[in-house]
Length: 135
Image (tube, rainbow, N blue to C red; front, side, top):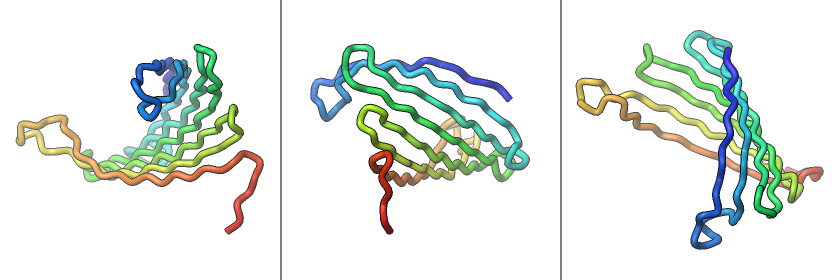
Protein backbone atom coordinates (compact mmCIF):
# COMPACT_ATOMS: atom_id res chain seq x y z
CA UNK A 1 0.00 0.00 0.00
CA UNK A 2 1.27 3.45 -0.78
CA UNK A 3 -0.19 6.95 -0.83
CA UNK A 4 0.36 9.08 -3.90
CA UNK A 5 -0.11 12.80 -3.21
CA UNK A 6 0.45 15.29 -6.02
CA UNK A 7 -0.62 18.72 -7.21
CA UNK A 8 -2.02 19.31 -10.69
CA UNK A 9 -2.39 22.71 -12.36
CA UNK A 10 -4.67 23.73 -15.23
CA UNK A 11 -3.90 26.99 -17.02
CA UNK A 12 -6.17 29.24 -19.07
CA UNK A 13 -4.36 28.92 -22.41
CA UNK A 14 -7.31 28.27 -24.72
CA UNK A 15 -7.85 30.68 -27.59
CA UNK A 16 -11.60 29.99 -27.60
CA UNK A 17 -14.11 29.11 -24.82
CA UNK A 18 -14.93 25.77 -26.42
CA UNK A 19 -11.28 24.71 -26.00
CA UNK A 20 -11.03 25.19 -22.24
CA UNK A 21 -12.70 26.25 -19.02
CA UNK A 22 -11.38 29.81 -19.06
CA UNK A 23 -9.91 29.45 -15.59
CA UNK A 24 -6.60 28.71 -13.92
CA UNK A 25 -7.03 25.91 -11.40
CA UNK A 26 -5.02 24.03 -8.81
CA UNK A 27 -6.01 20.49 -7.93
CA UNK A 28 -4.42 18.59 -5.03
CA UNK A 29 -4.80 14.83 -5.46
CA UNK A 30 -4.33 11.86 -3.15
CA UNK A 31 -4.41 8.22 -4.28
CA UNK A 32 -3.85 5.12 -2.20
CA UNK A 33 -2.80 2.00 -4.08
CA UNK A 34 -3.77 -1.39 -2.67
CA UNK A 35 -2.35 -4.49 -4.32
CA UNK A 36 -4.03 -7.92 -4.58
CA UNK A 37 -7.16 -6.78 -2.70
CA UNK A 38 -9.46 -8.12 -5.43
CA UNK A 39 -7.47 -11.27 -6.06
CA UNK A 40 -3.98 -12.05 -7.25
CA UNK A 41 -2.50 -9.58 -9.75
CA UNK A 42 -5.12 -6.93 -9.03
CA UNK A 43 -4.89 -3.29 -8.06
CA UNK A 44 -7.38 -0.99 -6.33
CA UNK A 45 -6.48 2.71 -6.23
CA UNK A 46 -9.16 5.00 -4.79
CA UNK A 47 -8.43 8.69 -5.11
CA UNK A 48 -9.75 12.13 -4.19
CA UNK A 49 -9.09 15.42 -5.98
CA UNK A 50 -10.29 18.91 -5.13
CA UNK A 51 -10.23 21.44 -7.98
CA UNK A 52 -10.36 25.18 -7.25
CA UNK A 53 -9.70 28.36 -9.20
CA UNK A 54 -6.87 30.71 -8.29
CA UNK A 55 -7.77 33.57 -10.66
CA UNK A 56 -11.19 34.67 -9.41
CA UNK A 57 -13.49 32.33 -11.35
CA UNK A 58 -16.07 30.19 -9.61
CA UNK A 59 -14.59 26.68 -9.73
CA UNK A 60 -15.03 24.32 -6.81
CA UNK A 61 -15.39 20.59 -7.36
CA UNK A 62 -14.54 17.30 -5.71
CA UNK A 63 -13.65 14.27 -7.79
CA UNK A 64 -13.74 10.76 -6.36
CA UNK A 65 -12.01 8.17 -8.52
CA UNK A 66 -12.16 4.42 -7.93
CA UNK A 67 -9.68 2.53 -10.06
CA UNK A 68 -9.71 -1.27 -10.43
CA UNK A 69 -7.20 -3.19 -12.56
CA UNK A 70 -6.77 -6.92 -13.12
CA UNK A 71 -3.69 -8.32 -14.87
CA UNK A 72 -4.64 -11.34 -16.99
CA UNK A 73 -2.94 -14.02 -19.09
CA UNK A 74 0.37 -13.84 -17.27
CA UNK A 75 0.70 -10.09 -17.76
CA UNK A 76 -0.19 -10.04 -21.47
CA UNK A 77 -3.69 -8.57 -20.95
CA UNK A 78 -5.39 -6.30 -18.47
CA UNK A 79 -8.92 -5.28 -17.61
CA UNK A 80 -9.69 -1.90 -16.07
CA UNK A 81 -12.88 -0.52 -14.50
CA UNK A 82 -12.85 3.10 -13.35
CA UNK A 83 -16.02 4.60 -11.84
CA UNK A 84 -15.74 8.32 -11.05
CA UNK A 85 -17.97 10.75 -9.18
CA UNK A 86 -17.67 14.52 -9.63
CA UNK A 87 -19.39 16.92 -7.23
CA UNK A 88 -19.59 20.45 -8.66
CA UNK A 89 -19.99 22.51 -5.48
CA UNK A 90 -20.31 25.82 -7.32
CA UNK A 91 -23.25 24.73 -9.51
CA UNK A 92 -24.80 22.11 -7.17
CA UNK A 93 -24.41 19.31 -9.73
CA UNK A 94 -23.03 15.80 -9.59
CA UNK A 95 -21.76 13.63 -12.39
CA UNK A 96 -21.07 9.91 -12.52
CA UNK A 97 -18.83 8.41 -15.14
CA UNK A 98 -17.58 4.86 -15.59
CA UNK A 99 -14.81 3.75 -17.92
CA UNK A 100 -14.09 0.15 -18.84
CA UNK A 101 -11.04 -0.99 -20.74
CA UNK A 102 -9.44 -4.17 -21.97
CA UNK A 103 -5.90 -4.03 -23.29
CA UNK A 104 -2.97 -6.17 -24.37
CA UNK A 105 0.76 -5.76 -24.84
CA UNK A 106 2.35 -6.18 -28.25
CA UNK A 107 5.05 -8.80 -28.04
CA UNK A 108 8.55 -7.35 -27.58
CA UNK A 109 9.77 -9.14 -30.75
CA UNK A 110 7.69 -6.72 -32.87
CA UNK A 111 10.11 -3.89 -32.14
CA UNK A 112 7.31 -1.78 -30.63
CA UNK A 113 8.02 -2.76 -27.04
CA UNK A 114 6.00 -0.64 -24.63
CA UNK A 115 3.27 0.40 -27.09
CA UNK A 116 -0.08 -0.52 -25.59
CA UNK A 117 -3.16 -0.74 -27.83
CA UNK A 118 -6.45 -0.61 -25.97
CA UNK A 119 -10.19 -0.50 -26.38
CA UNK A 120 -12.34 1.40 -23.92
CA UNK A 121 -15.91 2.54 -23.37
CA UNK A 122 -17.32 5.31 -21.20
CA UNK A 123 -20.77 6.14 -19.83
CA UNK A 124 -21.56 9.47 -18.16
CA UNK A 125 -24.62 10.93 -16.47
CA UNK A 126 -25.29 14.05 -14.42
CA UNK A 127 -28.00 15.61 -12.23
CA UNK A 128 -28.53 18.42 -9.78
CA UNK A 129 -27.42 17.57 -6.25
CA UNK A 130 -30.38 16.99 -3.94
CA UNK A 131 -32.77 15.97 -6.71
CA UNK A 132 -33.87 12.53 -7.73
CA UNK A 133 -34.56 11.12 -11.14
CA UNK A 134 -37.55 8.96 -11.90
CA UNK A 135 -37.20 5.84 -14.03
